[in-house]
Length: 370
Length: 93
Image 1 (spheres, chains in turn orange, cyan):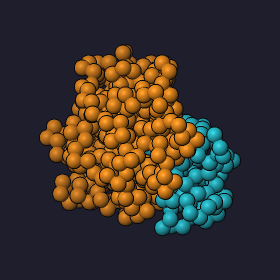
Image 2: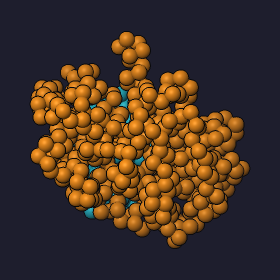
Image 3: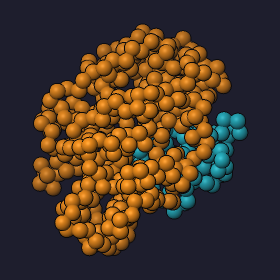
């Protein structure tokens, strides 16, 4: 166990871990999925698996936006970025995600005008500052980020900005969870629900997981104590035969979510009939596109994006890692061809990707004897 | 990045667009507070910030915990970089 003394309430952490050990059924094998990439990062960073009994397996879920983005969408985006009049903008995580012909950073070094932004509003500002150029935001993220893109688009409409375009790759967490539950080869006993997505959508929409699939969900904060408490809450539900949605992160997440954020999303976006997810395949009603009223600002309409379909590199086993069928280090490329410096798959790009988190916090420290 | 950044509202800007100046560990930047319109942000409130937008109001205690968490995760510098990187509050080109 790393850093245990740095934690808030180390004593409480020890007690919580002890209680987890006390209540697990030693003959059972528990598969608990943490849906959110932020949780994956925290789990590896703090070495939480070391505190848990051997028979609790943490399965890393799909809640890392760049990790689930299929390569075809990167290629579509980069095709837009190659156009002379375009300033292509994206968040930092996206800059190192490879398409078939390299990453946005590599394309930039070949002369394309590609800029990293920290906010969708930065891209809108660029459009206002460069009226002679077309500024494209490659937007990405779950319900945490989609409301910010929506408000930015509402502002673009209000200011009547003609040269701002959004290439929406926003995805929805609930259809992904449903797809995992429907997948015959994925047995999950309970879910650690995402923290910040849930500030937007609230805890209530997870009820279908409990009611229809009979699996417990606990919405969790990001600290070690939060995650351990959430795991304990899940184990108690399992032991008592309950399947409910519980909210461990109630200091930030409400039952109903953020109505203003949901309203902004509703005004700007509609649900796509189907969207491809890396590792999970095509999931119906799982992603957001701009409504026809916003077609003027829709990069897919303006640049006539065809929708490239690109299979993942054959040797990379990103899909199996994303589904929890393989652990990161069990992929043939892990730590060899595929490293955080030279990622082959997106799971190695984002610090929230299971492979990068495992590489940085487990693999490197093992290699250095730490 | 899923880990939101805590900041304190120090000034409310134009009513219409719902902008505010926040202080994040001494760094002051303009952010959008439109997502808080139902909760009503006031000077002195603590908020969680994500990609230039306040996502929710939090307690001062929760803000301190979130800062500490970012520090423990080795992400506090990156968080400050992000806040310093918001360009939309700047005048002109």
